[in-house]
Image (cartoon, rainbow, N blue to C red; front, side):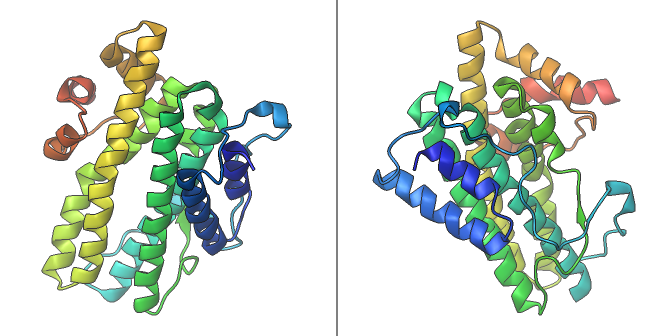
Length: 269
């Protein structure tokens, strides 16, 4: 099995637990050399436009989602952890999708990085599912947002755009909002959930760093300047706008300088 075939296998697996199991197994096989080749589209396989999904949760448009409950109640914390688990499930597939679509044309280190990200996201999803079980709930018990895969669909043709939007907008936004969630959870005595989110936050710094590193690599190959190129791609492919406050400390740890994103936030004022 090539790495590309392994990635497509994960993407076409609907059961979340099996998606996690395969992700972690394939990541280990890649690191050990049991999967040795990246593969390419000559094998006749193609990544799906949308990954396989279980029957539950019910997927809804963002406007049809129920209002977020406060973390002070158990139901509010279940809703928060469930929403984050859904994000992490999508993140597993986003990581394997970038390997399947773009790995063949990139250095091996590119696949090394995104396989590690996929492994991290699988570990995060599993950790959040365990937390839901401790609450007496499970993934799929609540409806979920169906807008998360859109970033993949609109950037499926362009590696620079994919890197600009997924790690450097969406995951970077996670760095911004997660510390407040952690603080709120600790305030209500839910250290277990807060500890899980801290692990996720710290791992996401390395994911944003990988996105920034490979975005700059692609820009170098195209002989274009990274900052204006990123800003133009975000204007083109991300309609939500960049909003303050930014977690500049964590973004800086990822090597993601304020010169990239501050000017776009100024445009929203």
